[in-house]
Image (cartoon, rainbow, N blue to C red; front, side, top):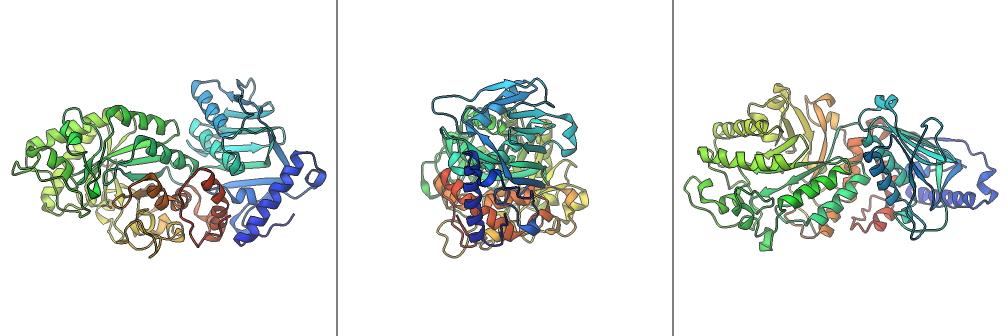
Length: 541
Ligand code: ACM
């Protein structure tokens, strides 16, 4: 079996051919069983086997054997070891992704001996795999059993996502009475970066909790693990603060263009946090300050130096608003907001924004950022700020989120702080794909899929080495986006590209290989109902 996979058409043909052969093998036809195809060692140089070729992000190592398959049946059981509630939850999660016989649930049971294993799918915690870190895993697929093993549950979650991508897209969660063939072989994998993030701007336009959860589901498919929620801006305050109720009652009442706005009650926010946590995604709340605060200023006159509230703002200018940083009462306000949000947020971070402040002196700005940093730390969180905060005195644990394409990171580097990379000219998902894109902005340039994919974080900022980069995050600003379909159109497929930048080793990444794998994700994105952009750079299947 000799697949040439250098262009999309050949890949498409190969995938269909291999799947047909695998189906034949499952149904007992001799075509594949008798054939001893050599194992396919997957490397970018050979462009991968078709099923491996459809894995995004590319794993560190994958070796899949087309000669044999594991027949996934409607009643294939899932076994866990150890039998903890979290392992049962993971098994349930996997069970929900796999097709079942209609009307039946998948059996989950405890595994007595990990080494012996049992026919079926075994989810196993194996401390020996600690060398793969907190999120690495090994997925071994033989013709009678699948063993997903990891030192930590997060690794098993990612093994499950890999297994999910080895199933045909039509299989997602459906009922079927026939067996589905899964190629045998092994994947050993771990992420390049610990921070693999996506940001949603729910301030310029509000997204309902159900839509945020939908985005979380799709992040999980691509092994992303941080959801940064931009919860306040000039146009809307989107999270209930019980000690300052007018922030949402008034400040959350509209949006860009004058629409209805909205906000999350504390219970709704906590529910989103828990939903994400169950998918190994940590929510990072952002309250942008001292600028980007018109919604707060409109809600409480005392936050303004002249005690006069401005009107609500529904345009898309930036840089005109600021809290009154000279007033002590402003810091009591910040303390209340940080305290209430920190109490609802189990993750270790609080993002204070800090970007695009055009009405304060550098000294006023620095004093404010440093005081907020103390408040954030007093509530047990580590601070994150957009790259402008690099010009202030930072605590060593504070993380700087690099976004301005031409920003120098010099100040933050000299203080030794670490970075999240969100260069606007690569990963700002609100930038248009090209001049024909109806949605989005273009101040940082057009970002086609290749532009979002084809860069190396380690060489992006002069003086910032890989060891100072906690990871990559793709913000999605929503000035021009109203519905989840709008958000998805700008996010997909670029979010998948960014996920691979953040997960896969640089030497495993190549554009031609990626675009072929992405093409094979077209049917999956369609099956999930995602309103993705059909980039002409990708030979979609
Ligand atoms: C930003 O885009 N103003 C962080």
